[in-house]
Image 1 (spheres, rainbow, N blue to C red):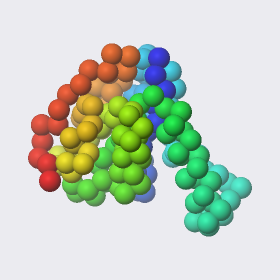
Image 2: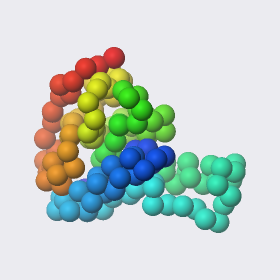
Image 3: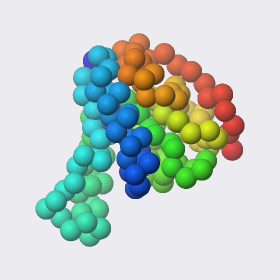
Length: 146
């Protein structure tokens, strides 16, 4: 069973709906022991946007990245671009030698710094619900890169 860190943007209703579809798929996946979604941690004891809030969010996310076996990264953000925080999380996971599963629903490309090192690519939440995180089948990105 696998512990998953879910990286992805949640700045508007479309992004939140996508994130919730991915969370539901991970919840339904029998090979996922647990997953951490930063979206679910609000850190209400800190003023949103303050330096203290930023530090506790960063440290919490970094610790959860360390604890995860695999990172699932949602790269749909703004046209072909990935959210900068998500890009950082994906790079940090890669530096730890963790496998990265990229989730991309929208058409368009992916930057080579994400498309080349990623382990596999999933385009629909129902595919993520049945992906075997124990075996971790690999795939290559078949869309445009830049």
